[in-house]
Length: 544
Image (cartoon, rainbow, N blue to C red; front, side, top):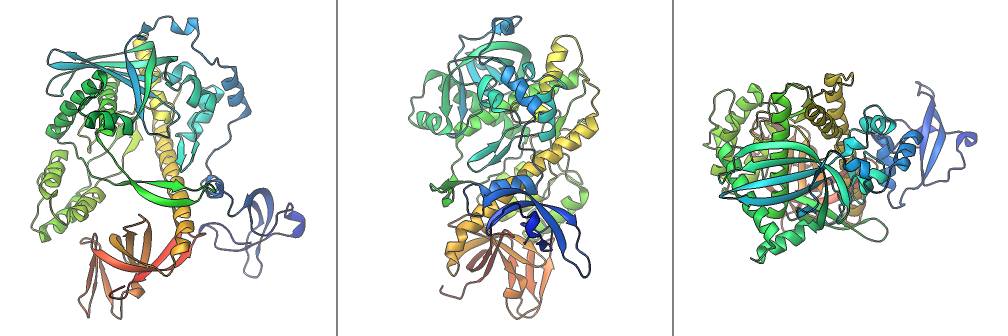
């Protein structure tokens, strides 16, 4: 039987006695009992029958095993979860501030089920006072208990189309820890004063009991704002957002424009269509409130010199900056700032080029010159957001580093320290790796679904944009479907094409033809390989 994925290139022979009643066309998990040899096939035994290849959700079942994602909670963790109360108890309220009368609301997407942040805002003269209430997960998930062990192994919740593999059992993630409307919940609150110029002032953290007065969606809030007559509490949040966003620009934070997409599914769980997801100021209201709380948390912990996992985005390497400047120079553009440019240098250039027809090309090149954000106990700041100390505090239901930040803050509030015998360096590497693992698995599932969807369109021609240039060809994103395919270099014509990585292009030695990042291209879909997640394209004939 063929392996589902590129890591094992050999077919695996499964003797009938080891097939576990699996039928042709079914997907199975196979344990390798004999590796391949020069004159012998690999031999395996079936350990699990997952179902038929075309079954709804099979792509997720494959990804869970392909990326070794923990997807079953331990019996011990489930037992602890089951023992928890469904409601806040009287003893849980002791020592907490009572914020139940403040008009907190949650604002999330339509399909969200775990709500870990709620916000409330008041005017204070010309400025604002913001309350950000975050689910007090650390009250229920204790250091070293079975829930903590499982959560640490997972590192993060994994979000697939139509399914979530949560970091915590549903009893917590959708129940007692989720800030559902009109029920009491425990929270760690960041209360911060913000000036009319959007500057963060005095802040404090404290445990509280509160309730969310409404579960709002981005679509709903944006419609209220556009109506010109939003409810008072939304109007205040929108006014706060505008001053915070203006402060972000003055600070020089980098603000890239990205297009998110959403898959629409039929009753059988297959894609019906792929649509762009509109991002509006309702999303940005919550984003700015969460950034403010994260910055306060980072400053609070750094000021107390307490170990924690910072969310770090290091300065770009000199080599990447040099390559970027060489590329920009050809277009008559420059990036100021010397060998180590500052975020505001990137932001200023982005603003300068925003109206250009090649803006998306330039933005892509700028983005690729930056490093990837990671978790580490070494605080070197967040380059992209232009913050000196930044942590993830606002999503402890779905990110383990946030849970650690909560424990550190609560320990400091109690005049203690949260050590727990942790190897912070190793923990930072682990959380960074689990984040990448989750992203890789999500992308793999999306690629499977897109390939399955595009099988129906083989032979058709499309307009697209070159979104990747590599030595062996071009990756093109199709306009109508937001799907990527490869035009292999051998399909570009009878010429020898040179790859220029610094300028993101392929050029023909004889014809002088150039194919560059962000160029438009007409292509024809010729092959789809669902197993390998590959979509093959060729240049479309003129007029097609």
